[in-house]
Length: 369
Ligand SMILES: *Cc1c(COP(=O)(O)O)cnc(C)c1O
View 1: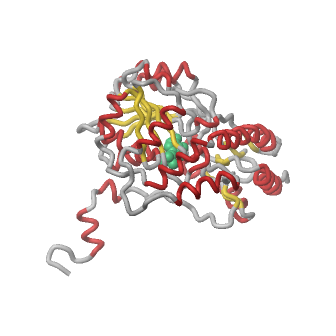
View 2 (view 1 turned 30 degrees about the vertical axis):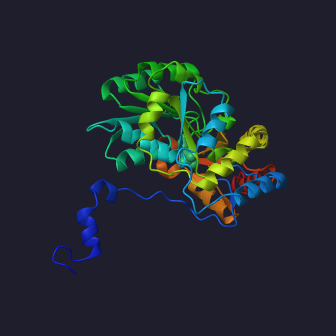
View 3 (view 1 turned 135 degrees about the vertical axis):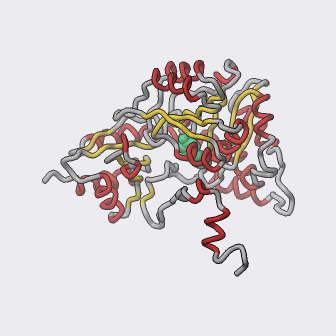
């Protein structure tokens, strides 16, 4: 031991920022051998031909060299794939989580506030705290709807430097109307980032609107469309914004294998698009099958997951969550988050076989007594 510190615990307690000590680490439950319907992953793997094209591409790579720092080939391919205007820029992140971090860093003057709705994607709040920014939110009602007047009023009061709107929203699955989101964008005193993580399953996008508004950026990810293992997200918007955020990016944040793999995915995009369409088709069936079970309310969704609320008369969300886990099915129990999520569960849409397994297991757990 030294004179300054009597133990590791004491050194940590004294040196680590108190707000970091108070955080709970992001928890990922074990899922080996489970039917995995908890994390909005695409249930479908790549077909053999695509897998072979990918392996051939990987075999050409030189891992002794650093990656292309600007991911130029991927950048150009995606810019074209999205049909972006020449004046629209593009920036890659190691998952969109990294982009959330860079965006907050970019605007984080002393006292800066980050604002969103509640509940929403937890990383906005967590990363704001990591970076010492204030975070505030406006609560959705029990039907997961936003009082847009209240949100506009809260922006006027809080003057957030940055507003994140997940569109569709996680964990509720619904999306604001275009009209409401436009109202928020037009009233915002700072930067607005529309997080389109679930774009592949939604009808609308704000990418084209980034040409109209000088303070609007759109963020997307490859994760939910079938490439969660890659860790690749991207930010779209006016080049002047992209250039500033790019300065904060650590060199080589997108590794060589991710760049090459994403290029393969882009050149076979119709396969991923068909998988997303299949998930959208199955969303209708799964919603109907869930709604036919006793004691369960099913919420509308524009994403690849469905939120349900259990009736107070029957088994609780934690009980059903544990019951499913015992049956080998992992979903997300939202109930511990409290508030409007009390007694709610979030179910990622799986393959038809997995969805049927889920329904059969739920039928047993929710059997009317
Ligand atoms: C899953 C998710 C992300 C994270 O995406 P990654 O690219 O995997 O980091 C971002 N935003 C929302 C709303 C999400 O649900």
